[in-house]
Figure 1 (tube, one colour):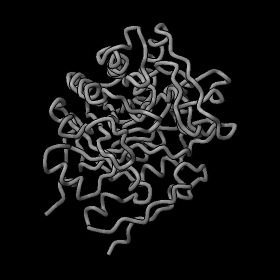
Figure 2: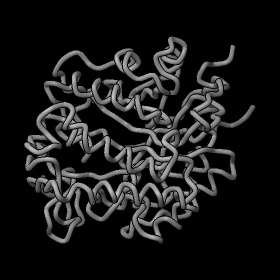
Figure 3: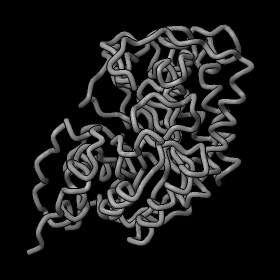
Figure 4: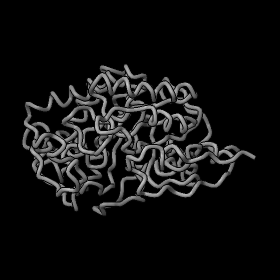
Length: 363
């Protein structure tokens, strides 16, 4: 019997050959200029049998930067560079969305000519520091964005989304998870604002709503996804009212008619333990559109989520690093390759640990 993961799925107006999503994976192969290149195009093309690829997180502006050698989408050269990837993926019959990213406080002044990173409020990450162009540095207390500055941030998302369309992507995903800027506005732990962008679950959602509206002016809304991480503690996140906040956000997003809601529902990579985790069933009760589950899924648990109706698609991240043919391995019952050495995940070492993982031998 064929795996439910291998069944086709109609994602709004986009036909997917299977329900396997390649999750966004930051790999730091863009060089100091942040321009996507031919090596990246080869990497994504190798994985183009996924029902849908979501690109690595891609910064929408200089202000959004904060990760060494990650790609951007705010100059002509970056847009042209990404076209190498979309052409390569499409040549192999694949579909790919670009993930739009602003790091907010998860950055450092050395990325910004000495200017502090920005956030919802002036609250620093508690952690052991950040890798910067000058080596590892302590986290800094960010500067709270002025209310008058927020429309320009929204405009940066819209411009980046338009560039993604120019670069040949099939859609975009708005990264509102994992403690980056939009998540910093969503969560009461990091948002202590007293203007219209803070103080209530409704106000904390306002920036994400404005970004969705702006991005949907550049794309049909059925080609716009949103990613949320209600349970995770990455980047020192986790708020006491997380269940109320994220279920409210999902219910509001449902009215937009998004391509999908991408939820980091699994607990495999950490849980803030501030209450009962938000589950796919919880999200399904308030979000009627396509739902993508993510975080720690195996083939068996992914099949169970699809069969039960809790998810329409399942995203796999780390398995895709060393298994470019993950779909074929699932389809044929082939074992997965050994996990990639973590030292190669973000190492700007070219092909090593990046495009040199062979597919499973046929026969």
